[in-house]
Amino acid sequence: MADYIFTDGQAHHFRVMVGGTDYDVSNYWGSTYKSLNNRFRELGIAYHLWRAWSFALAIDVHCRLTSEGFAKWQQAAFDSIMEAYLVQKADYEEKLAALAIQQGVKILGRNPLENRRIEREELKKLVLMMLTGNNNIARNSILPGLEPNIDLLKACTNGNWIRFFENAFEWNNLMYVLYPYFWGRKARWISALHFTDPDLDFAAFLKAGAARVQVPVRPGFEKAVAYFCQFGVIWEGNDPPLRDDDLYVPIVDEIAENLGKLDDGVPYPEGARPWEVRIPTSLVLVQNLEEIPGIRDMLTGNNVVITG
Image (cartoon, rainbow, N blue to C red; front, side, top):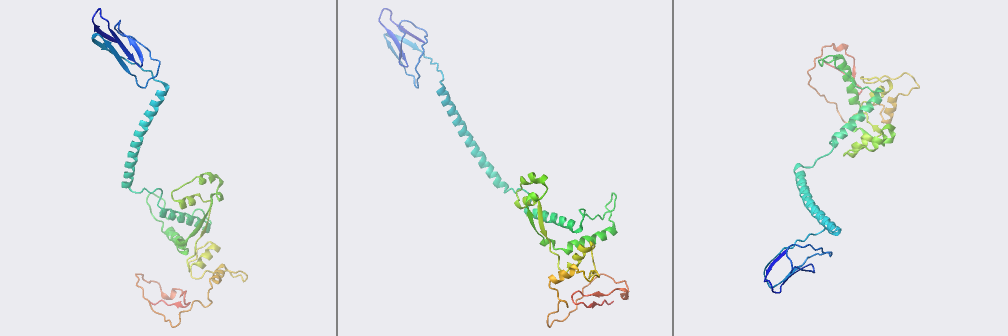
């Protein structure tokens, strides 16, 4: 759009150059539209005015986006967005790390010591099932009813049973080796293969298909354990009864031979003398001493004399 004032009857001209194209607007005023076919990175504008008093010039440039220009804009926009994202992400991770330091180290899974206890207790339960030949080893000493009343007779019987198995073996020295999952039920192969746990030893225990367990018998309980294995009965006396068959070799004799038992027992050290030890007790003897059967010292083989 162009307009200018000049003296009538005198020569004059008004020319405008846009992008290297010349436009002569000397003979008319108003707006005109021209199409520039060339592509410009920078658009130059110039004008030439001769013998004019005043003028007005307005140039509007309407641009059309090219595919190359659009791709360049996309790349620039993407770079700007990613730069802002990386800055915010770095700030977030820094704050997250600081928060994790304040909260301390988070331990996943159960305490490894608790896992070891569970492993030993579960293996102990299975060993007791095999020793007793019964999958139900629970000992119920509670009477039926709403109140937890104890069946005293069962409590005594069950107490003897539990005490024997707890004392006859050194469960704290239990040793075991776990075997791979494929020795177990085939239906659990897939689940066992994909099972994981932060405690690798506990994961191996839960995935195991079989195990080898060794439990030592507490010294002094060899005969009692051998008697239970033979007859399935707990023997609470000093010497378990043996079978009267001359051709039968009792297992207790084999254990004694393997341990290198001396025929005359373990002798006292040379020069040793016996000594008396008095242990205070609140027990009161109400039975006639003559009715009490003889008690034999397991170490010396001598009879123990009870005095009133």
